[in-house]
Structures are given as C-alpha cells and as structure tokens.
Amino acid sequence: MTEMESVARGMCHGTYRKIAIFLCFVTRLSSVTSKCLEADVALVLDVSESTKVLNLVTDKFQLNPDYGAFLKEFLTHLEPMNNRVGLISYSTNATIESALTSNYTHLTSSVMPRMLTTAQFAQQNTDTGINKATELLVNSGLAGVYRYMVVFLDGTSGEPSKTHSAIVRAGEANITIISISLRGTLQESLQVAGRSFRQFFVRKSSELMTRLDIIEDIASIICAECKGYNDVVFLLDGSDSTRRISADFSSVFYASGVVGLIKNVTAKLAMGPIREGLISYSMHPQVLTPMTGNATVINLALDAMAPEFRSTEAGQAFRKARELLDNATPPRPADVPRYIIYLVDGAVSNDTDLAVEALITRNTGIEVYAAGFSPAAKFNDLLIATGSLDRIRQVDSDLDLGQFVDPLAYYLCQTAPSMTVA
Image (cartoon, rainbow, N blue to C red):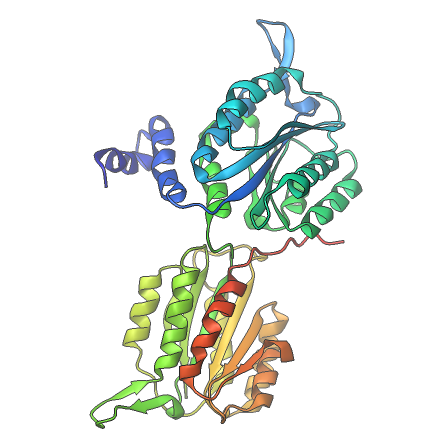
C-alpha cells in the first residue's frame, strides 16, 4: 500500500472524512479500474424542468451545477475503464448529445458544457430517453460487448406505462439498466433498474458530490468479469459412500472431485459480487462456512472439512441451507437470486423429509440444482430436490464433476435479469 493509500484509508472513516472524500474515492476506484471488461455505456440524463436553476450571472437557466459536476466526475472516472460512452438527454423528447465514443475529453470539454445550457427543461418523459439509448446501443454498439444504460431521474415520468414498455424493450435487447434517482427512492427508479441492487439514489442533487461511492459501485457492476449478483449454497454429501481410501490404505479422505468442483467454480465466482456458503451433510448438517465472497475462506474450509461418513439426511441439509441464506450478514435485498447446488453420491436416507424440505425451499424462491456423482444416486431423489428435469445432472464418479465447472460458473455469473417484464 502506498503512503497516499494509507492516509486515504485512515481518513475515509475518520474526523476528516469530508476533506478526504475524493482521495478515498480514487483509492477505492483504482482496484476497480485495474481490470475492466470492455463495455458500451449510455448515460441517459434527465434534463426536465426540475433540473434547471437560474444562473444569476447570465440571468439564464442552466442544468443544476451539482448535477452537472457529478456527471463530469462520472465521465472523468469512466475514462480508464475500457468503455465507450454515449450521452442522451431527455425531457419531452430525447436527444443524442454524443454517439458512443472513447474520446472522454470531447465529452467533458465540449458536449457537457453545451448541454448545460441547451437542455429542454420541460416535461419528464423517461421513455423517450430509454428508447433513444436502446436505439444507440443496438445500432452502434460493438458485437460481443456488454451493454449498459445508466438512467438519471429527477422525478416520475409523465407517462409511466410508456416507460414500462421502454424498459421491457431494452431488456429484450440484452441491455442492463442501472438507475440513479435524484429524489430519494422513487418507485419508478426501481422499475427502471429492474433489481434493487442496480438502483442508487440521493435525496437531492446537492448530495451528489458527497456520494462519489455511487460511481465506484456502478463501475464495479460494469467492470466485473463475473456479472452475477447472488447467493449460492453448496450442499456436499458427506455420507459413507464419499469416503475414499488411499492406495496403500494409510489414509482416508473425502471425494476429491467434489472439492475440485467447488474450488474451481469459486475461483471464477470470486471475480464478481457472489457469496457462497458450504454445508456438509450426513447424519447431521455441518455449516463449513457462512455466506462469504472470500475464496480463501472457502478453500480453507474445504481442506479442513471432516465429514461424518454416515447416513444421507438430505432433508436436514436443505433446512440448514435456508437458515444460512436467510441469516446471511450483511443482509441482501429480497430480489437477489439465491441458489442451492445439491451434490449427492447415493440414495437419501429419508426421501419424504427431502421432498418436504426441498418443496419449502423452492417455494421461498430459492432455485435448486442437483448433481448425482455415482450410479447409486437415484434420479427420483434428484427430481424431488429440484422439481425440474432441466436442473439435474448425473455422472458416474466425483472425478467426472469437473465437466460442470465452466457451465455452472457461467450460469451463476450471468447478469440478473430485470424483474420489470411485459
């Protein structure tokens, strides 16, 4: 850590926080920008009547200076992130102020100053901005590049039904929308983002320059190699059938293919905001880790696990998994996806208990996926656990589980779809 970073971190939470806020922001942001996936980003800027103020020097209306300063800061710190950015302003109608470009100097020194004084300052029709941004990203975006829309709102749209239709259209074009409300937790802001963890807000524009952390959080969403934002619990069968004996009969160890699967998946999930929890189950469930995004904690727990090597009480494992997810700290919003990956090596000891607990689990919105890793794992048990044929995989040995590393990590790393649907 450099001397500047050390000072900044000390000040971020101390008496001089206001003085250090920019320094703290730069220190945190440096870790985000060190590696950023290429993306096309459309900034969709509300320039309706509520965003204007009277400039007493020129006696003309202009965009609120706090709003304008935040936008300039936003653009300045998007520059090193390997992105192309386009600007759209919207009020009654929407205008493409700048096509997608990596020329940030042009955006901050030419486009933004012009927009500050030429904005419409009329009715807020959010749908026009979203539709125009969708058009820009679809027609001008690079093939194979992630596409994002960051929508600023200073109120509620004049025609909410049209806004809803515009959001759905953007989702169908595989565009991820992030919203920033300038007037608290607007319901329309949540609808625009489609997920609460992609919604940001301040109570008023004057707070924007004290909330540069919003830029950091949005950069994390855009830059992450793993785009998933979810909680996942792995249920590891620790029954007698998972006991392995070394060739010279000198030691007993757990099925190495299960450990390898989770370690390799974890290495991929660690590149995004995903939390994992581990539970080993046999006669009793054992929580190996709480919900964590720390790959080292996961790996150490796998290395240290001591299974009971007895019966297969899978129903109890599902009950414990729900507790682990429900009591995770810090708590996450209710719309964060939650998953259970159920790994089993044979027939369960009590299929009735499994059926009851798995059904309760799925009814709470937790998605269950299952993999049997021996011929003894009953297909009906897997179906009882998942409730779906599409969520079942079977192999002959734990050593064959490695084939699931890439598809499982890919699935968990997908951007959570918008909950605003047609």
